[in-house]
View 1: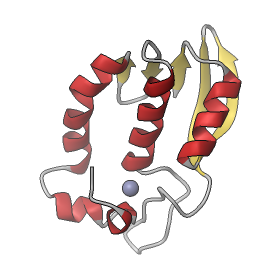
View 2 (view 1 turned 60 degrees about the vertical axis):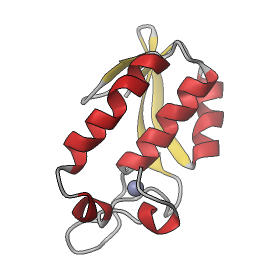
View 3 (view 1 turned 90 degrees about the vertical axis):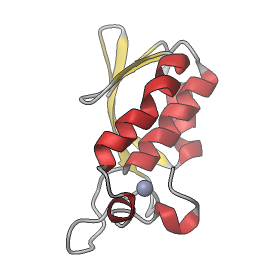
Length: 122
Ligand SMILES: [Zn+2]
């Protein structure tokens, strides 16, 4: 993803707080570009055989976005799926993106990671 309006140190601290890693972070134009990866068993979706995958689930991404916008409400976060320009834009559209990603059956979606066992889904 690309994040505009933040420095690397602050993003690193946010990632640590949330429990994710910033993989291969580098400057690209005015943005910082990196991949979000799990830092532990937390926020790891499972494949069809139930094995944990080395990627971050939707909940982990959402927690990370919320934390970024808490620190810098004017930040811009651009991913393959979304382009959030500030906290108001994020709040207005994130629930809709969640619905598209998880599909109509929330219970099926919840099985793809363990987050629902720790707290209510979304
Ligand atoms: Zn999850």
